[in-house]
Figure (cartoon, rainbow, N blue to C red):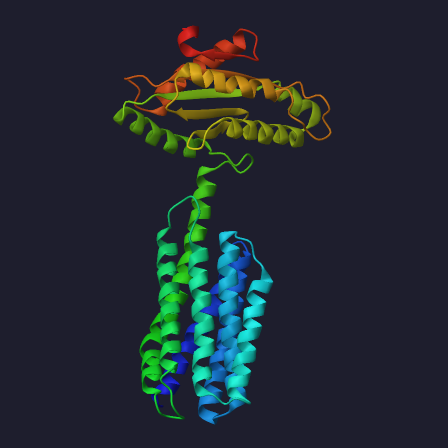
Length: 382
């Protein structure tokens, strides 16, 4: 078996393994659109490498045209999947029009024009630019790269550079065999490595996304999408440590819905779930980014307000208290819902959330005892 056969077998095998891996990932891990798109990309890649082998060994222009079309489709699907995953707008004409132009140019280069320079230039240039755009699309907004994202980003950029290097070396081609040595050298040395690297890092991204989803499920309440008790405990440990280290204030609010049991008993759990989701949304909208909202259980919630004194936290909760009565629930014209709040502030002796929680809960109990629908600060209640 010659070197070309070994090389094409490796590339075909990589595409096959990736197609199977992505199919399994799509079937069993949430059926996300971008994973399905990447599956299609590598499935087309399988066919493209078969066509490439046919063109190479049979010296058939038709097979080379199929190879070029496969490269265009496979690269486009990879880029589309990246944009789907990033949640950025997907404008199909922006992919379809350049792909059609590249296909037309390739057909002319292989057919009527018969230019080997164009044959070696058009497809690598198109794929290289497409991969560079994909890498840019992968760049996260409002956060840092995760480790799998970073290695995938680097792999995409490296793949783009290899393709552009192939395009540049194609300019040296002067005949059927003249000037092709550099092109073949770049392809044989770098293409298998970078193709495998891109495939492996794409799998790492899918696995990393799955791990992140699992971590979110462990730390978040599925009904209200705020932190659960475990997530709140973890966030509180970090917030308390930061506040103590930098001598900053930290307020804790414990609150629940007045009349929630009556709503549940009178209108069913669906209405109760709607009330909890609506109350959680009010709490999230009232605090700043970086503050922490969690569900402690039942209709009880806890909030950590960073760099905030207890009096200021009470003022923030006053807006929530005023809006609770206006929560709109389907099929429940009058909810009768109100909310009570207990507020405390971090002291020098507080080490854990439980230290603050005991005071905030006592303040909440005082608010309930004094008539509900009110905010009580622990220092005043004490």
